Length: 161
Image (cartoon, rainbow, N blue to C red; front, top):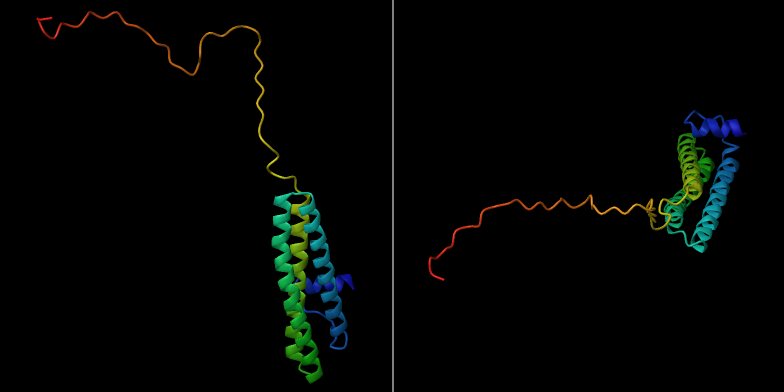
């Protein structure tokens, strides 16, 4: 069964018979609902931990999974209607769309898992500790030295004082 799902996700023609498609579609939608529940739980955990980066990442994936799940439920309905009309072409198309939506849901779940597992990029303020060896440095390397050049006194502007 896993090999068959792998082949479907890779875009290879599926060997699922029309009789098995409703059951397979229902299982796909159920797995997508389970993924949604996992992402909801992960988002809640990230919010409880007050990790805004993880919560934002999970929320972004969660919104996409919700949309895919809603669309997939429509594809499942289309599949069942096409099968009841015995429209093979339409049922194949609906099944393929459902398979693609499930694959995308799995990708989003993996992306969410990777962003949950990543360490936060911002880990606080940087602290720099400067240790002096004890020798007193009187020179400031950041300011240029002030050199007084001997110069003759300028002439008086006015002969009258």
